[in-house]
Image 1: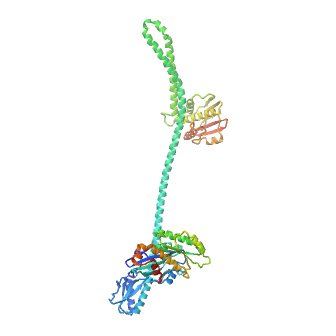
Image 2: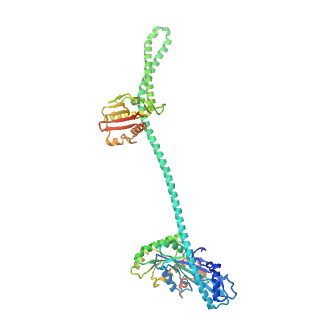
Image 3: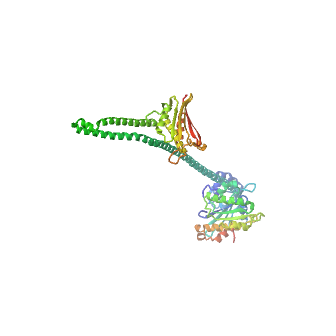
Length: 400
Length: 214
């Protein structure tokens, strides 16, 4: 049992200290009219000096003596009365001490409970704080992930466009490449004839005639001229591609949007059968812009228009028009293809929205186009009637 | 674990229960009914409206044939809900518990809450509630609204603790409840304290010594 427990068995010396005994014992001795000593429960004197033959009166707090009154000369009956009185004092003191010790124990326990709850609260708060930090980090990571994926998709759309471009370009380049290569083959045969001439120089003019070198010379020059034309065509296609990709140009420069439109048209290449391209371009002021990006916008819109006509399954026309107003530049790209329903129209600019089969469209064409137009402080609007066609209207402000 | 020194052994028993279920009355009746070799006064600390504020204490004791003084100190806890801290402190270091329930049907919720608080407090002050000697007394059997005994027995059928029925005001069942706890207490501690082996105190002698029966 702990020395601070309220329910311990209290000793006399603990309940009445020396000062208290000094106040109580002398008057008690006077009342007794005899010698008096006060002893602890093991007989040790706490006040006064007991005579060897002194009579002892037990002071019982609960069921055992907590101490004794000792006197050698007191009347036994009086000593007994003094013991009862002293016991009453002791019990009153014990009650008070026990109550206050219990009170302290209870408060300490309550305080310990509070401290425990407080520490639990702190722990849970720390847990939540950690959680919220982790949450922030996780959100950041996911946002970064989403951005990376969006970037990838954007890149995929670019690659898809580039793929289409590449297919068209390959077709365009293959043609001149084919006849240049064929011409060079023929030219090599002509050189062989000249090599043969070297062996027949003795025959003189007869050999020249026999080898038909007049024709060889004439046709050889034509072949080379054709090769030059073919290579020029390839060079032009490459130049178009370079301007389309904006390679080697500063991000912003002054450009004529008609040039961009023409580039886009030439990159789109020869329209499929049944589709006519009709351009009506008015002179435009120069626009500070990123021509490479705008090329991409026009290319996307023209490609969409042609696909809309193909989707309709009938011949049609893509109209490309430009004009200038005091406020800026207006460009219209219209088709008379399938058109869009109001629901499709409402979602047309949403990223990843596509009506095409999976794998054939990323749904980023119009979204990307709008982003580019907005980056030029311009606007892009779509008007469409199902079955009748779609018109994209773009506006780029030129006034500062 | 009872408090032990060279010449004595002291058990602490606690009367626990909801407010005004009759814990102090149990102690007062025991003081009247029992006549052990050593019996102290009931130390009560009541407020003026007879509600226990801190605790009541009744000390009892007898000497074993070996000379060992066996002491029992019976405490009551304050029943009022507000005094839970005090209740916990009084319950600390208890060797046995009498749960005094109020038989009145309107008190069933209070009984249940007090019993739960007792179990919780036992755990909080480090007492082994599963093994501590415990008896349950349904007091105030004389009330017209008392829950019938059969119903109480049925409800407590699965519980491991002895059930007692009492009217503490008249003393009816008070001694039987206490005796039941004494027997549980003896069985729990006989072996480790060597009560029979070293001190010549059988269960019967233990009960007789405390109750003061010849």
